[in-house]
Length: 194
Length: 185
Image: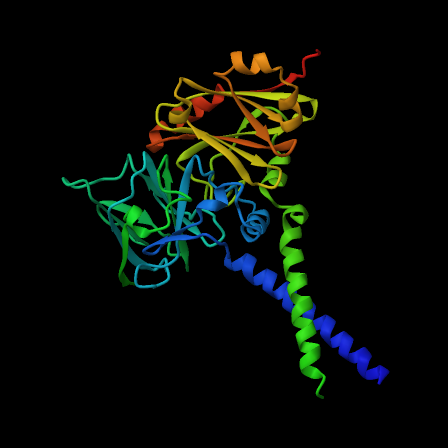
């Protein structure tokens, strides 16, 4: 009987450690956080920039070493796929166009999955709302791909997977924004792969 | 064998406790969080400009390359901190983080409404020691309470175009943070 108790306890403790540590590792690497705001392919976690940050986001930030954008400063939207759910592959061409929510300034930046900028020949890592080329109606299109293209070209350097971060500065979008009606985010469409 | 489901149930319960405690312990156990990274290159209570992120090297992940960034790593144990930063032409913001990277306050140039952002940062105890009259006469000075005695102030100035990065860095070069020793009553 005692042998069975001993092996049972060992089994339980090992399984508990595997479950607990595995769950922690999964949540921290996948970036689980509550209170997300999703518009199209874009997701923001406005509470991460305030004292209302949840324990999972706190742990993730402590592990990655980033400083989240403060709520009084702006809000950051992350996208890893296009509107149809295709992952951002650096060998494919994606086109972003449409409207942006109200903000004094915005920036769009391309990173690899670890949050590093991606090396490219023209040393461009993103656009700001002030430098983007627009048509007569104020709309814009951004081509993201490995090869140069006319207009607003954001080089992806051909890496396997990238992340786009759209940061809105001095914007009314924030913790109180719970619906997607608050602001249209630009659409992302995959055009083709080489 | 009837006991096996019971052992598994116990393991799941224990695993939940392990999971929650490791998540909660992570911020204090992390050695590569933003404060630890900056502590190696930034002295205490001084504004230091950070190198722009590049594909080869960046101090922190997910930094916005359109911004000039300067950091003041503060320690309020010897007194309150005075922060003053001139505004750049485009957009300037100041964000306050605790030792564990929680953004507890952020202000931008429009909210500051002047040619510079001027703030006093102090702990709750130091704020309680500020004489009340002084609090009123200094109403145009913004007082921020820091939840922790150590933390980070991050100053950001936007360069709307790459050619304006020098302007943005120049604006932050005039920023100051310094300790004001507590006045004797």
